Length: 279
Ligand SMILES: Nc1ncnc2c1ncn2[C@@H]1O[C@H](COP(=O)(O)OP(=O)(O)OP(=O)(O)O)[C@@H](O)[C@H]1O
Ligand SMILES: [Mg+2]
Image (cartoon, rainbow, N blue to C red; front, top):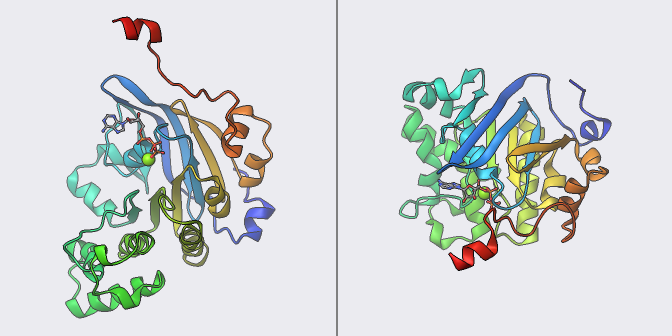
């Protein structure tokens, strides 16, 4: 394996040679329609890996398969040394304590306060005293800059703040790995930048391994130590941001520059249009 590039080191990358996730020949289909068609991927401890690709190309599907929420039709995911889809519910539960997830929507419980939302994983997965949990909740909220908002409910705070509460909750159990699904979606550029800074800080200061799924290129280039691009169910490009930015591959160039013309088609229908209309 190549060592981190000079640029990555300059950014403070904490990437090591230890593989924490190995995705092998992953296939996922819905109702016979293939979405992932042989994804191969490795994630190294300490790095921030960005998975990019067009809307609907299967990024969330890949993420859900990587956390054991979705069973692949073929292939496997080895997460922290465990073959994910061979584990029973107890095994999976034990593993779940070691990674956190920030969902595309934030996925907070509206009936609970901010503090209770963050406390949830601690109550579910540990037998810590209530007094300790209270302190830990305050520490996680301080990390995302929201310690003063503990007693509000999600509907009383903004979308960007909800994302940060989601992040505090993902951090509750001090995970080794955090998965982010579109962390900046629906946020204004400044707030999205704040989230990016948090992602980078967690990785660079605490050595957390991050997998960030996004189609927002600004954010992707800000946080990535390494990037992969997903297209037609496979990884079609892989490399550090400098290499991706400088690539001659027309597919990648079209995507990162958002150009309307290029190899990526606008229409994806596989059926014949005329036939479909007259059917
Ligand atoms: N549970 C499901 N049942 C059937 N089809 C699904 C299911 N989940 C996802 N799909 C399909 O799989 C494809 C990929 O969806 P996915 O959500 O993974 O895309 P994505 O890359 O995350 O898109 P976006 O950038 O818009 O979030 C889509 O065509 C979607 O309709
Ligand atoms: Mg998605």
